[in-house]
Length: 121
Image (cartoon, rainbow, N blue to C red; front, top):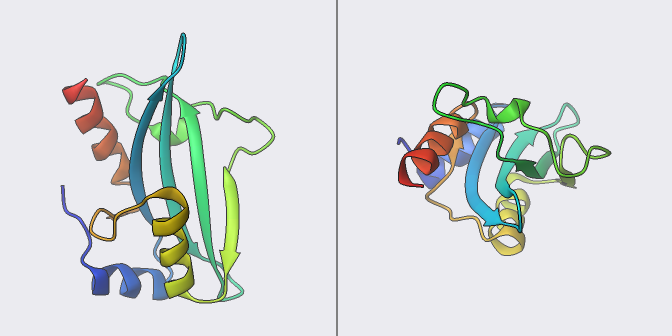
C-alpha cells in the first residue's frame, strides 16, 4: 500500500484531490461495521472531513466499499464536518477519529485497504 507522506497529503488536498483513510472495523452482535474517513476540498475552498460507517457487504470479488450500505441511510455521505484550512481538517481527523498522519491514501485506494482487511480476517 502506498501511503501519502505529510507534504503529499497536503498537496493532494490543496489541488482538490480527495484522500481517505481506513479506520478499521467494529464487530457488532450479528454484523460488522467498516469505518473510514474521507477528506476533500470543496468548491468554496473549504475542506470537508466525512466519517463513514457501513455494513461489511463485500468479498474478494466485490471490493467497492463505496457501494456498501451505510449504517445511517439518512447520512449516506457519513458525518461531514467542514474546515477553512487543510491543517484544521487533518488535525480534526487525527484528534476526533484517531486517524494516523502516515496512513492516508489517495481516493479509490481505500478498496485496497479493504482487501487487506479481508485477507487478514
